[in-house]
Amino acid sequence: MFNPNFDMRDNFFVKIYKLMSRDKNIVILSNDMGAPKLDIIKKKFPNRFFNMGITEQNIISVAAGLASTGKKVIVYSISTFISLRALEQIKLDICVMNLPVIILTVGAGYSYAVDGPTHHAIDDVSVINSLGNTKIFCPSEPNQLLDMVSYIFSQKGLKYVRLDRGKWPRIKDISKKNLNEGFRVLGTSNDVCLISTGTMVHRALEVKKDLNKIKIDSTVIDIFRLKPINQKVLGNKLSKFKLICIIEEHTINGGLSSILMTQTVNYLKRNTKINICSIRDEDVYTYGKRDKIHNDLGLDKKSILNRIKRILKK
Image (cartoon, rainbow, N blue to C red; front, side):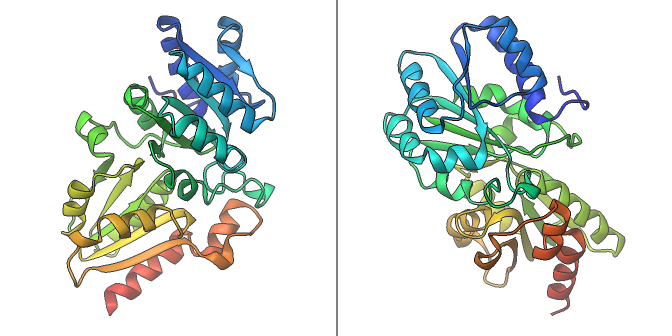
């Protein structure tokens, strides 16, 4: 059950603790990463938790070896470190062999904003998306993540799960239908669509609230499975909107906007207006607090709202 006092990863580890109590094949490998609820797992299951140190390439190879023997492996690491440093091992050891490994990462987007470009995970989706036999999950809040856990375990191949830091409020439960489709719809309007993934869904909901104040109806679509997306179902849904605003904390190259524009564009009407709020090439290497970065890059609520109003006036 979702606990609002815990962040995403601790809510996840509470769920995993219960699963590990029933399934002796679940094993956790950590890149020297900690979490309060993970400490409980370490004490209860010392033979199924291994701190591999800061060895991203090695941890992937070990995970692949364990998975090949039937173990259900969870690799716990920081998003940008594991996706870039261990890319060759992820491709050859896990993806080529189509092994069922969960890579649980913390640090999506600008989660570690003040740590600078070394810690910013604003290109990891594009990197992992380029590999075969992979699935990418990006939950917007802990309750949604918990609803997804059993589904994630049931999937074949690599499951890359990217989490944000901190505590995020519950939005609503996701249904079995949502799980199969990989997204959920928040709203009923067919005028403006605010489509996002991860915790930027909360930014989309903020914009929706302000649009409502000025009598502009909008719907938020929360894409929690970035790969594979359900092209037909999502494409048909997007075809109903007059304006689609894509909001993401990721580079425009290979992120949500690229995925949507390459896989659903054929479903859109010719007069559908598209507005993309993402990170441009010239802005990928930045530094500062998260709010400041959002303001500088136009990912703050006010900037997104103004862009939508300008487009609707044309």
